[in-house]
Image 1: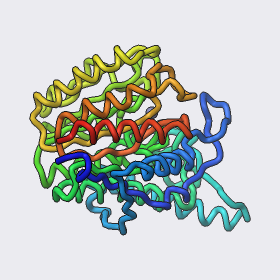
Image 2: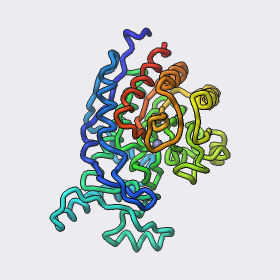
Image 3: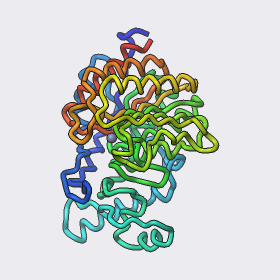
Image 4: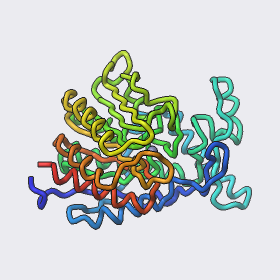
Length: 357
Ligand SMILES: [Zn+2]
């Protein structure tokens, strides 16, 4: 297939705009919410300027049963119920734009059961303060997950070789029964589960700056899904508790998990070396598909992180990933250099299309 005939669909939903917390607590200090809606709109504008892309706004197709293949029904119900509670609270308090912030974290079942009966249960399934719940949060996270699912459906039917799901909120920090790090439902995991059901074994490559702890947890014991992540060393960077090299997979799936932690001041050359290792592992696994968790917070321009990747390297990253020549879904994750993310995602996608045959 040549460049001219190879098109890439961009799956997009405006519903992400319904979720716009105004602030977050960074080490206890209130700052503006970094995971802003504009992140997605700037990428959308840049991707739609490419000659080979076209936008799709899919109808809801993802069912709760399908979400429940990677998350507990308890977590799903909690997100729906807390969103509804936030709506009711707004009416009671005559307030607009209320978000329920996690602030009490139960450490055992007894604490959780007690807290769940209270109005302050936002922290029940949260591992940090970064995933507040507002009245439309469920609608936004459902729409985001639906994009990942619909893109996976189309790739699994071989309608497209490569598809881009412009997901927001992101997903890779969300675990089986756990929210945090701006993430509520794990979009990449929902996509991977669908691809695995139709096409059999496959791989997830996570190139966000932060370790995809949620995705690792969900597939920890699944021998059919290889999870490979290149990220900042958790010894010194978020999420701190997950992403170390010695985490190789559960008993049922030993060596189906590969973490490649890198030093904080990582440059292009160091990064590309790790990417080669990641791609060698993926080739060795002989997957039938790839999900790419694409975060752009690895770039030098990102205000919240420390890698020193140049803009040019994203084309090279795309080329190398595209040379795997697998049915591929790209799932949007992090990236906080808001106006810059469009340029980087366009380079990544152009690199992928340049090398795909
Ligand atoms: Zn990140």
